[in-house]
Image (cartoon, rainbow, N blue to C red):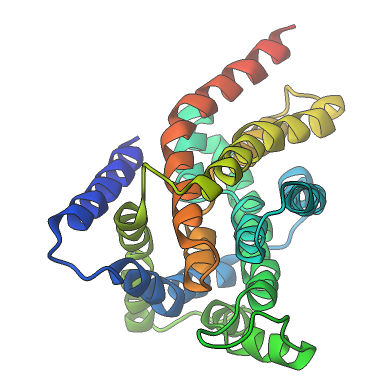
Length: 309
């Protein structure tokens, strides 16, 4: 559980730096750029080559994609109904479907289920969250963002393809797949590990630096919807879908708990980097991490209660 103390500490550091006025206002954006161009590609290079495609249970592998397919239409309907701006819609489409299934997910799964639950959490994270971030979230960022000083019109298919092709985490994903079956030299492996380990501290400091407890009026309703969808509706859907498969199975329980994780910090970084409602994106990540200390134990208790019936 030390990881949760670390997360809180990183956010507090970011808040303190924000209030110290010793750092420029764009410090958060600079830290996010480091994450997108350095730390996140290092994590991809670190994790993807170790994937093993065996006859694993399909629950954790398929659930993130199913939730993505169900969440996107809901967000688009809400955006039309509530008249959200293009930037707000893009931020919600990136941040809400993606959960923090690794840094928050792994230690929480181990805390609830022991080390036996980690393989299922790894499957959920690596076959679901990372692929969705690298492919789907990249496409959404390309469609909904626009370069400063240009129109906000949707870019052409060629422009979208070019943005995807040069997006650092996507480039790292291609390289990582090409490197499957090969072992990195020891020095290179240690170098990648040293960069990957900076991901969470840097982005959580950035989240803390950009976290506003008094959000603009136009960001409050989307924040409430995002937190409700991510922390309540998403795991409820996972529970309903998997209920008939037997809640006593460890794979099923881990999958539901992973679906209940707060928004992924890397997804928040991507949305912020793309200029998609930065204050809202940071708030969804920040408040989600805080609230998950309450919601996750409640979901675990509910699952155990249903198992005991």
